[in-house]
Length: 280
Image (cartoon, rainbow, N blue to C red; front, side, top):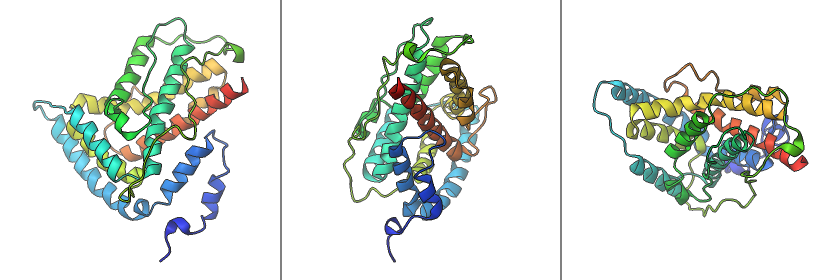
């Protein structure tokens, strides 16, 4: 049987190559379409998501019991980096690294253009899998919460910033060769299958409060979009956020889709701001 990667793409996937009604960079589209065409996404992923979702809810239930809490951040990151290095496809790994950079850029944009507050900018821009041992997923979440807390109560903007007044000091554009990802023959696992495996590890190796905060942090997407929409005069940005209403805390139900849509949100918002920067 011919490899699915060598078959002509379906009409819908060919249309996706050109549809940038929602802002997204061509490189992100290329990586995502490569991931969609991975054989493991259509064969292994459904089974993994079914079985591991049950395991995740079991771990979540046990962690919610009044038992002593433990965490193992270092072990968690070493396992993730080892697994990404040996089994996760280069396209999926690049999407993971892009997510660090896109979200760091978005938060740094907020910091740079809020002169009434003093907040340390983010430096989470890993270029290779090994860099994630330091620029970890746990730190990624905690930096988001730190920025929102240190910025304090959001001040409603009476008018958007003029294009020439926008500050891009800590913005780092993503170049096509921004990441170093040597390929191994065993790297075949798609993005969503890898996440199905990771989500159980996260629940097990974080405390219950850390994990609860991490899976609810996605809902700050709407808040970030509202703030940046006011800065650049584009209230439609809030419609890009799939995860909304951060005051309503949720559990791990539908976590895979919520995580994926959080990744799309940061790609959309990054591309919207990068277009603005290039025009300026």
